[in-house]
Length: 326
Image (cartoon, rainbow, N blue to C red; front, side, top):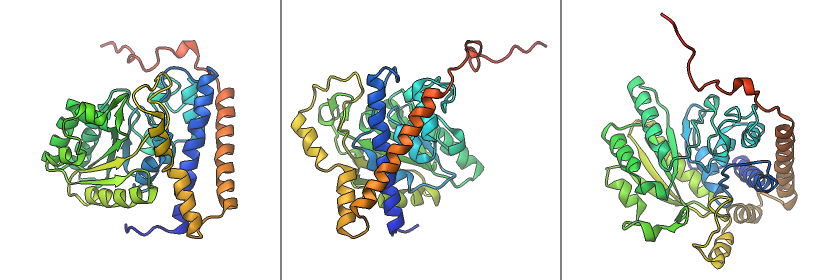
């Protein structure tokens, strides 16, 4: 796979970023209306990372994500209907309404879940990679995590084993500078995240996570390294979330001016402006893509609203195995 990007691929990248943005905006409104409950972590501002990386993967690859994973599930192919129904807690959700926002899962699409535990997905990805290694299957196991997870023991254990055993794992750090509400330089003595990964003899790269094409090119190279049997790879995507950590976050740890400054580099409007300058996109094209995204969101919300709740009689399904008598 080369770094060349066709005009059709460029429009697909923009379309997916718009789908994410409109779905996340609708989710925030639905949360305010009390239709989505529990925790809700939005991806607004970080769209270029999920889109760029996931467009670089193959259909048979696996993806493990964090609790901020709506975007990853959507771009991976999980139906927006199933995502929205899951956030509503409906039985038609991708996790039967039992996982909610933080636990989207769809094995058919190789999406092995969001994970509410910081760094929890790292060991899962290593386990998936070990299985592929033992079976001699060429597959990329892509694991997304935030920079805050790099302070967890699971990060160090996972990087060490992946490098030691040369496992096919692509580690993608979504560095949005704030682990919940703590700035990177206030929690880490070493803020060069690639240096941390490289200490385990894992090759690394760092990319502008606000530039979807840059992410795609870097992810293609990283995925190729993993798929060709050269062991794990660490990719840092420098990005920024425009909204609070979660809907409960008072956001007292950063200045509004900083947020506004980052918004000037927003991945959607900066990319659409670039495509227009290159003659690859017109304003009418952009509005059509945006309208398609909004229509998809409206349909998903209506479908989730109409979907049935899980019956009380199924409450214990999946909690324990049926009793087996000798």
